Structures are given as C-alpha cells and as structure tokens.
Image (cartoon, rainbow, N blue to C red; front, side, top):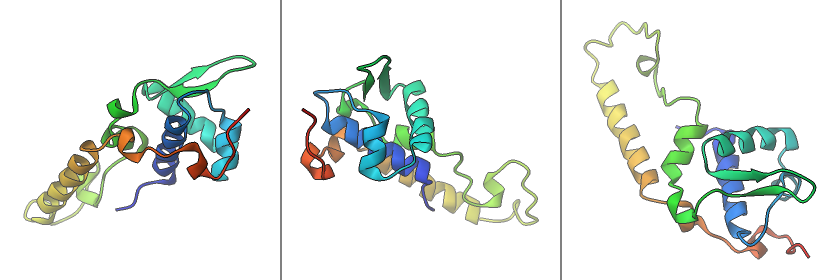
Length: 142
C-alpha cells in the first residue's frame, strides 16, 4: 500500500502550518518550501479547508492557519479525507468480478491489515509531528 502524493503533501502542509502557529502561511511559501506546484497545493488546501483542518483568511494579508489545535488533528482523519479509496485489491472495490471472492480468505486478512493501519494512524495527531520553523530550511518571515 502506498499513500498518494496528495495525502503526503496534505500532511506536510499541515506540519508546516503547525510549525508557524504564530502567523498565517501562504500557499506560495509552502509551494516554495516543498517544491510543489502551486495549483496542486491549492487543491490540497481546498480539501483540508473543507474538512476543517485548515482555515483560510482572504485578502491582501490573508493566508492559512490550522483550524484547530494540532493535538485535535488525527493523522488517520487526514488520510481518510485525502485518499481516494482504500481498495487494496479488486474485491474491495465496487464492480468486483473476481471469481474466487466467495471462497477467498485474503479479503478478510487484508481488511484486518487495513484496519490495523488506520488504527495506528488514529493513535497519532499532528502534535506528534511538530517541527520548528528552522527545520524547514527557511528563515522566519519578518
């Protein structure tokens, strides 16, 4: 199993916002720090804002900030919002045409593994990933 870049970048964006709790961050600066396209980061920001992880402040001196405390943002919740699906194998998806689904034991085992994966992510919050602004290799804004 591999998380999409969307989920990876979403977690990184939240980490960056958490490290700069004292000010608003911008999509432009996060794009520059992570070398991620601004357009892609806009989509991620919209998803995280709609899900209630980020809040957007519009206007000339606007930007982004966490919508809640880092200790209230569970990693599992972020991944569930940003991953398109968790269909690890065909029988997890709609339209399953696998001939052995009725007899196969693999589905149950993989479900157990996926449940364990999600349970581990749910044990951790953004607070567990906290970094300092200097850890991002950029100087603090004046």
